[in-house]
Amino acid sequence: MTRSRLVGINHVALEVGDVDDALEFYGRFFEFDLRGRGPGMAFVDIGDQFIALMQGRTQEPDRARHFGLVVDDKEQTRRALLDAGVEVTRGRSVDFLDPWGNSVQVVQYDEVQFTKVEDVLRGMGLDLGKSERALEELRAKGLADPG
Image (cartoon, rainbow, N blue to C red; front, side):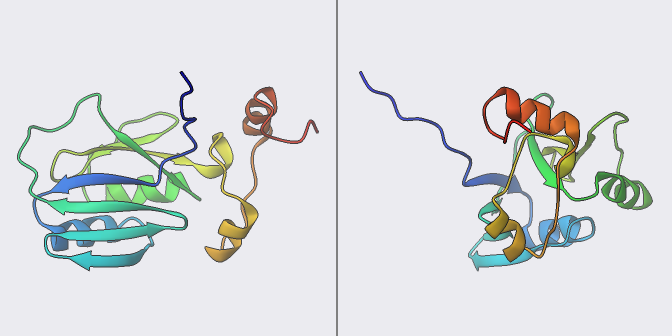
């Protein structure tokens, strides 16, 4: 039986208590464009991907389940979260819970394997590179020029 190959993630859907409050909360820490809105939902653009914010979260806060965001400057994100009184973990990534209990992990683009194609980066107004460590990880998988 032939199986489909996973290619990437198009979007992540998060349940929040109130969509407008969620847009205000995330907008305090991240620069983003709104892709669109609908009743009880909003779509936050991340270049060729997006986050769908859906009104109606009722479950307990997440513990191990989380989603990861990639930013150009994670320390800037850490400072903004701390300045806003959001509890943030220490370590390589910036981990926090949003007001609705969604667990978020923030990493920096140049430090991880995640890669956007040049056309998408340019369209987002970004000029980002990779650390040697991230390049080595990508090369080991055949996903970057041998060097």
